[in-house]
Image 1 (cartoon, helix red, strand yellow):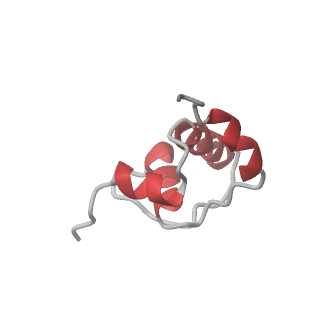
Image 2 (spheres, rainbow, N blue to C red):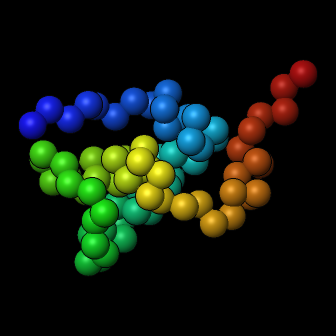
Image 3 (cartoon, rainbow, N blue to C red):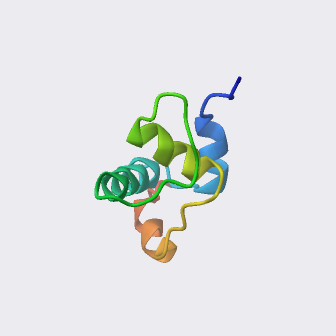
Length: 76
């Protein structure tokens, strides 16, 4: 079965903070490692791949998205 690869541009549309994506994926991968149930399947079964796919499909919710605005640079 063909599954399209993870598209980082699509992830940025869903979560517009480029530094928050790896943090969210890492936290979800840690939760999966600690016996959380995955909501998607991947061909390789890698926890990071599963977390990326969940983020891309909108199954990961960032609770304090307001705090992520600190990550946006204030360049003028």
